[in-house]
Length: 337
Image (tube, rainbow, N blue to C red; front, side):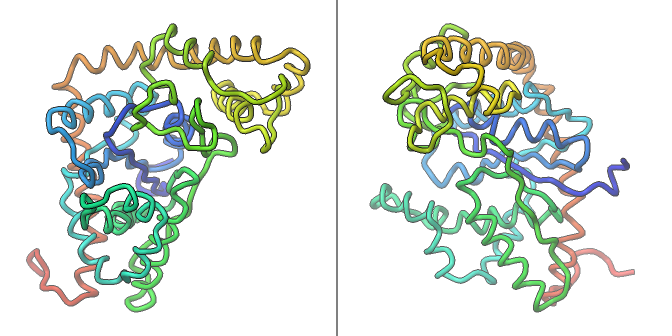
């Protein structure tokens, strides 16, 4: 399928914490599977990351770490556009315009803002409040058709759609209305120690997540300590969030159906299941970890790839920005012919 006619997919991850098996199952695995059918724009959203204070040296190092992991997980830079958000000024330019089509009430209703605001105290900043509009800009800037998201991002994508529809009602079909994509299994991977909370790459307790670069011995320890539930039945049951989370991880990584896993481990207990889950994870992450180590050594090549990706992204975004400017009555920035 010609890249010009392919529908557009956009997705991104903040360079904070450590990329986990939850990120892989919930997003990156889908990127790899969908890149053959979509014109993929895979962005490292560093502007979003600074809504919380970052150490500059750590942010720089981690940004390269994440980009290397994008490729290590199977993203082909010759097929997909990999770039950094701050390298394409159109993200911020369109965000300002979209701010003028977004109500304060909509932003105040954002669940993630309310959660973070309750924990930020005096550190609350305008960027944290306005985060969803920049996210909307990220998506709408590229005429995006499909956005792979986790279950916790549904509200943000719905706001994006509402902003786009509002703009289109006034000015015509300017923005493509994006649809969400979530994997059938694994859209929300939970913490190993607290299966009622999402697995977070920024979690201060490393036992709560499995990082993509964890060594086999570390994975074994973390899976061994993972919370299960009373009894020893291997089943997916909402009343048993611990073992259900582990079953979902097993199914997502192995490709085996949840029902098949339940049948195979019926009456066999948690010990054997955790041992086998460990081996499945180790074998899944081994090639990612090994390829990452090789890629990360060549930072110059990673940087060149990002420069190429940013130029492709800038060129692709120009038509949307020009249409938006024309609707608003801005003087064209290029010579009129």
